[in-house]
Image (cartoon, rainbow over all chains, first blue to last red):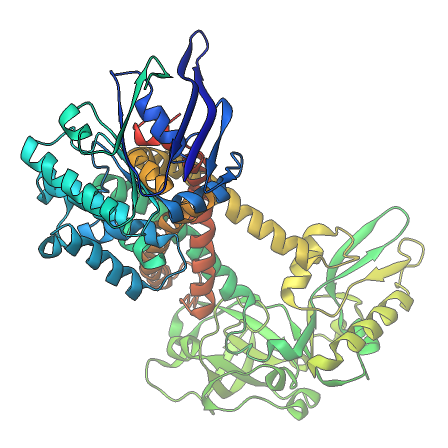
Length: 220
Length: 413
C-alpha cells in the first residue's frame, strides 16, 4: 500500500541542519493498523507527513499503490491526497467559520460531485461517528471529543484507502480517547488502512504492528 | 463549491466587522468616484435624447489647416460644409448647426442670459427633440429667413412665466425678435451638439458674412444607414484631402473627418493636426486612468486581505491536506475578494445615485440629468471585478504557495 524506500528528511535553516528521518525503510500493507511510537522530536509526524504526501523526502522515495509518487507536481499530489488519504490531527483543525456539516464536506469539494451527493455522504459520515444531531453546530459549540469525531468523519467521508492519525487522542481524556480509537478500529475493520502516531502504549496496543523511531531512525 | 466559498466568505466578513467596514468603505468610495465619472462620460457621449440616432449619425466637429510651418485648428465654416458635404453617398440628411453663444435678453424688465444656437431645418430631423408645444421650424423657414424660434421649457418659464403657453408669442433675443413656434424639453449643457436655450434659423443672422468664411463655428451632422458609414467616411476624407485652403501660401491642406463625437475627442487629443482619430487610444487612456485610480486603494486592500488570510493558515493547511491544489485555493480567495468588492461596488453604486441626484439639483451643470442606467451598472460591475482581482489575486497567490505542513502548524513561511 505505502512503501518508504530509504527515505531521509533533513530540515535546513540558515545555520542549522536537522535530520528528522534517517534512511527509513517501511512498508504498510493494505488493511493494516500500524502505530508509530517514539519520543518527542524523533520524526513521527515527519514520517506521517511523508506518507500522507504533505511533504517530500530529501532523499529516497515514497511508493503508493506500487507507483512512485512524483514529488514535484502540486496538482497530482493534491489529487492523490484527496482520493487516497484521510488525515486526523491532534488539534482537530476544524474550520471555525464552517458548520460541522460544511467541515465534513471539505474533502468532497475537490471532487466532481453534486452538492446533493456531498451532503448525503457527509451526513452518512457524521451518522457513523454519532453526530447526526450536531450537523448545524459550529466547532466552538462542541466538546473536544465531539470535535475530534467531526475530524474523523471528515477524514473518512471520501472513503480513503489510508487514514493517517497524528496523536488523535492527545488532547482528549481517556474515555474520549477510547471512543476515537474505537472509530479508527471500526474504519480499519471496514478495510481502511490506519497509521496512527501515538505516545500512549495502551493506544498502540490496539494496532496490529508498532513501528518505533528514535532520532529519526527506525529501531523496530 | 462556489456556494461553499461564498458562504464561508460571508461568514468571514461578518466575523471581522472592522476589517469588513474598512474594506467596504475603500471599495465603495473608489467605485463611487468611478461610477460618477462613468455617468458623466455616458452623459456626454452615449445616446440620450435628443441624440437617440447616434448610431446613424456622423459629424464634422472640427477642421485643421496645415502648411509647412503652421497648423490652425478651428470649426468648419458655412462655405466649406456647403461645398464638401453635398451629395455624399448614402447621406439621408445633412444638418448644419452653429456652436451656441451666450446672449442677453430683458423680458419683463429682468436680465436673462440664454444660449442661442442657429441651425438649419434639417437639424430637427436628424435630432430627436421632445416637443412640449408646437413644432420645429422647417427647411423652408430657414430658406426664407423667417424669424421663428424654438425655445426650451426653462426659457419659456423665464420669458412668459410658469405654466403658460409660448407658441405664437414673441421673444427678443440678441437684439432680434422671434415668433416662438415650438417648446422642447431642456437639453443638458454637456450635450454639446443639441444644447441651447433658443434655436433659430441660420439665415436670420444679422449679417451674411458667415456665408463667405471657410473658418467658422459650425458643426455638420450626417444621417445615414450605418452600413454605409465606411463609404461615407472614405468619400469625405477624399474630398477633404483634395480641398485647397483659401490661403495656399500658408496652408496647403485640410484635415478633418466624419466621425462620432468620441472619435473627434480622440482626434483632437492625440493628433494636434487632426490627421487621424484614435478612439482605441482614448479608450485605453480612460481605462488606464480608471486602473490608476483603483491602484492605490487596491494596494491598501491587498494588505488588509493578506492579514485577513494570514489568520486562516490552519484552514489553508487543512484544505491542502484534503486535496485542494494551489490553484483551487487561489480561486477560493479570489472569489472571496470578488465578493467583497462586488458588495462594495453595490454600495458605491447606490451612493453614486445619491451623488448624481445632488449634482443635478445643484445646477452646476446646466440642465444636467445625470442618471444611472444599465450601461453604467455594467461598467460598475466591471470596475468592481477589476478591483477585486487587483486586490485579491496577490494575497491569494501568496497564501496558496504555503507549504501544507507549515500551514497546519500556523506558520506563514
